[in-house]
Length: 178
Image 1 (cartoon, rainbow, N blue to C red):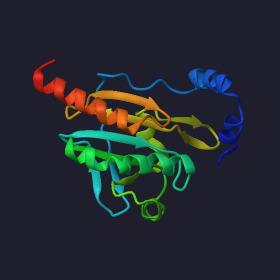
Image 2: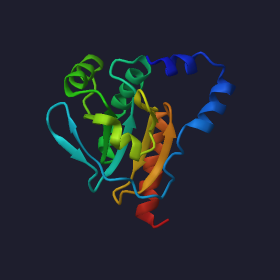
Image 3: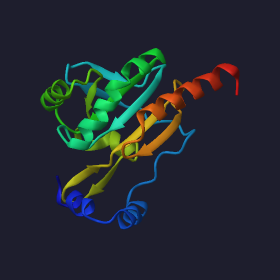
């Protein structure tokens, strides 16, 4: 864990929130067109946003406790995402070998993608850039519809069950013209 993360982790919640509100970049707003991305998974396959719903889970590091829990929660709901034709992607700067070992160790079956240098995380406002240490990923989740519009953005570890319910409601609203 980086020194910055250790320092932030030890602060009381109200102070941590105030710092985050001032320092973290603003999330991409709902309705904005999501940036284009094209990233490689540990199995050498390439992925990009297609004509489907996507959940992008930007996470800090392979093997981190919070990251493991969050990705395992998405894995538990993978049947729901499949039923709704939603693709889930985990994204971090770790290399393929690390992603492969991590996915196997926690039982994750969806693609973990390598964002070398954090360029996609920067486009999605999911990191802070520091001059000497480079980008620091901020745990962030986005829901993107088939037209590449941001439908949901959240920091931290939002409820995956709530994300599934949101997708169901948004897909129903799309079908009925709401």
